[in-house]
Amino acid sequence: MSEPKFTPRVFSGIQPSGGLTLGNYLGAIKRFVSMQDENFETVYCMVDLHAITVWQDPEDLAHNTRELAAGFIASGISPEKSILINQSQVPEHAQLAWIFNCVARMGWMGRMTQFKDKAGKNTENVSLGLFAYPALMAADILIYHATHVPVGEDQKQHLELTRDIAAKFNHDYGVDFFPITEPVIEGAATRVMSLRDGSKKMSKSDPSDASRINMTDDADAIAKKIRKAKTDPDALPSEVEGLNERPEARNLVNIYAALNEQSVEDVLREVGGQQFGTFKPLLAELAVSKLAPISTEMARLMAQPDEIDKILAKGAAQAREITAPILKKTYEIVGMVS
Ligand code: AMP
Ligand code: TRP
Image 1: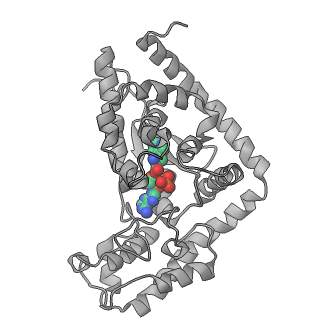
Image 2: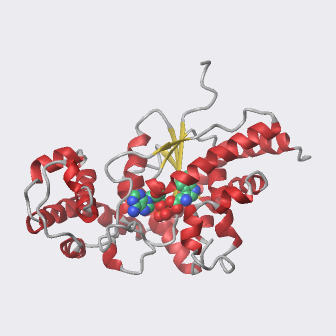
């Protein structure tokens, strides 16, 4: 192998389509924070253009975008170490997305399970943007020539599509211009499940608030949701195999392990044999101790929305130093006269 062609650079994004959940925190944000201190440039994004692929009330969208920025910062993302942006302030994302709309094939997009889940039987009535969503996501990543993308398990297929788009662009134009990005899907909680149904992902769009822990929930709400979480009647096992066919038990143990930065094996060594009546209060206490400081800090930051807007404006200016030259070069490769 010769010199690595691409600067090690991380990009990831979260939709400001509602509040942050424990799933976002454990599946994505915790890793965003740790990657800041590894040998990467890091860019983290509130993907407001993705959010509007389904209807968003304009006031809510603006509020949720600022609250998500507050959540990132309160969780430990430093605007000094990372570039923090909202997608719409960096127009090169949408510009590259158009090019990728012309690279990606209808058949590829039609196979995306997130589209199929979100559209359901209603494919005639969903927005064209919802279908094109993964091409914009590929553009988010590739407009930075990002090499690594930390995400939860549900985004794996979109990252494979991103690699396919980069490879087809490079092949069609006979260049080695876009990197083939590595997904980073790691840890005990790459797929946090609903507290009401162990077969469904914990999601900000679930109609039941009891199904999720929101980053803005107070200690009482967190404790109550964990106490009411669906479980089975058996005691916890001492070995990982004992969690097979027990999705709700597995989920609570995974959450515990991820919050406490332990392996699932280590957790079970400690709590194996306990009934849920004993384990749930332990989990609730752990969750409150980790999440309460974050929600307090979020509330403090949200009291100064102008400060958040300044951070995002600065982030956008820094981002465009990277994205503008990459877009320019892309246009040249494609044959756009300038
Ligand atoms: P979204 O809220 O859909 O924009 O997701 C933002 C990030 O959080 C992505 O990296 C997702 O994979 C991750 N994520 C969302 N929900 C979960 C979950 N229940 N478990 C683990 N990761 C999640
Ligand atoms: N599609 C991602 C999600 O819903 C959000 C996202 C948009 C993203 N662009 C991205 C994630 C680029 C990683 C990289 O979770």
